Structures are given as structure tokens and as C-alpha cells.
Amino acid sequence: MKKYDRKANREDLQKRSEKSYETREDSGRFKNYLREDVEFPQFKCKEGEHYIDIIPYIAGKRDPLTKEGKGTYVLDLWVHRGVGPNENSYVCPARNYGDPCPICEHVKELRRKDDVDDDLLKELYPKRRVVYNVVCMDDEKEEAKGVQVWEVSHYLMEANISPLIKGGRGGGVNLFSDPDEGKSIRFEVQGSGTNTRYKGHRLDDRIYSIPGDKTKEYTISEEILKRAYCLDDLIIVLTYDELSEVYYGKNFEGNTSKEEGKVQEEKEEEQPEEKNPCPAGSSFGYDWDTLEPCGTCNKYEECGDEYDRLEAQKKEEPEKEKVQRRRRA
Image (cartoon, rainbow, N blue to C red; front, side, top):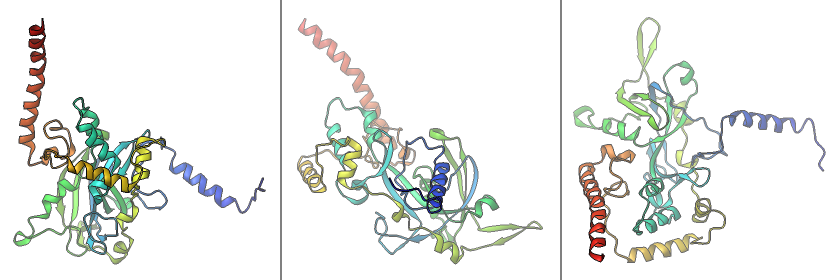
């Protein structure tokens, strides 16, 4: 047994004690897809009014929508949530990078079955999430925290601020994340948990309030820009094998390699499959008005009509069975 060194191990104790305090409310469930081996502050958007600046940064290798080395302000991802016994979240390799995904493959298998569980499919479909660098300007205490990383539903935030991009001077674009000519974003959070709603998104001039009922415009400083994180460097992207293991368990014996996953996808592509008109990749008609993007979807009305047709079909099936039983009798 190694001898305990009082002096040398004091720093270890301090780090472990701090970790214990940080995770004091952690139940061990609902882990995110953001890395835990890198320290970075995360913005906790609580109920009430908020005033934030979104800070731009340079994209890295893992951004699915922005080329490496190009400027961007948001990391837009599709994520499988509630996966495994701990209901963790994982970046979907298929929707983001075009690579095989064991969860998406399982969804395809389930959709071919007659007795498919629609609720299960809804849980398995990847959800759209976004990550920002933000500086919260609610008060001096929040502002002093500097750049924080904010992970949030696309439906709650990006879907609400993207319409504000249009309508700049002369019908141009509002570059609200531009360091020099950008805007701050105001919005209100109502409710909590699954009942959370984000409302009243608007763009405001970047203005400081100073004593004497005066204001002063400001731009994003070089110091703040330097502190912005390359957000795609902060995400965890599992391999096909790793994602299979967390989804099916350690005894998984299916396609346990990326190459085999590609073979499986090629076989599936050979089989004709009806084109799914749902922009979110969900079940058209079956999942009407149940997903986050439904409220802003341009297929909303058509999907609702299909939902009504399917519901009517369900009611007709028992009647057909009764007729068939009478004929057999």
C-alpha cells in the first residue's frame, strides 16, 4: 500500500472536495453531450426577463453546418435525448455528419413494424439543440461572469430569434451577433421544466445604463471575443461502437462497427421507402402537434389533416373486425 503524503495529497483533497460541492445536486441522470473534462461556465437561464449578448467565434472541425475556420455564432445540432438507463444525451452522427447511427437504424426497423409504438419513436427521434457563447447583461453580477456557454432547445431560442435576422436597414440582415454593429437580445422565460416557455424575443441596442439616468452604447471588446469558446470543441461525439454500447448495453451483438453500419444502411437504401414529408424527420401525421418544431412548421396543416385521417382509420378498423367475425359465424 502506498504511503499517504499529507502535503502532496492536500491539493488532491481540495480538488475532490470542490468536485463534491459542484455535483451536490447531481442525481447521476440526464448527462449532457458537452465535455466534462474541460472547465467552462454554463449559463443557467432561470425564469424571468433576460438581456444577453451572443458572442461570435471561429468554427472548428465538428461543426456540421459551418466550415472549419469560418465565423459563426451558434452550434446547431441534432441530439438523441433520454438514451440508456441514465437517460443521457448524445450527438446523432447520422443527422449531423452523415455517418451511421445505431439509434436511427433502430428507428427505421421499428417503423417497418405494424405494431410500432409511436410514443417510443417520438422519444428516439433526435431533437434539435443549439449552443451559444453568451454574456448575460441582466445585472452586474451576471455580467461579471463574462462569456458563458448556453445549451438550449432550438425551438425555444434559435427558432424565435432567427426571424429577427431579416428586416435590417434597407431590407437587409440584422447581424445581431456582430461585435461592432450587433444587437442585444431581450426575452422572457416563463415556467420551468417541461412547461418552460421563452417569449417576447426582440433586438435592442447595446446600451449601458450609467448614473444620472444616462446611457452609453458599447461594442463587444477584444477581450470578450478572445474568451469565446470554439463550441464544437466542447461536444462529445461517440463512435458507432460506443453509441451502440450505451444504447443497447455492453452485451450488444449487432452491428458493432462503423463499416458494418454503412453496409446496413446500403442494404436499407436498396429497399424502396416512402418519402417522409416531415421536415423534422418524424412520423408525418402520427406525431402532429407533439414535437418542438411543430408550431413553426410549414407542413403543420397538412400533417394535421393526415392525423385526422389516421384517427378516423383507427375507428373504422374495429368495425371491420366486427363485420368479419359476423361473416365467419
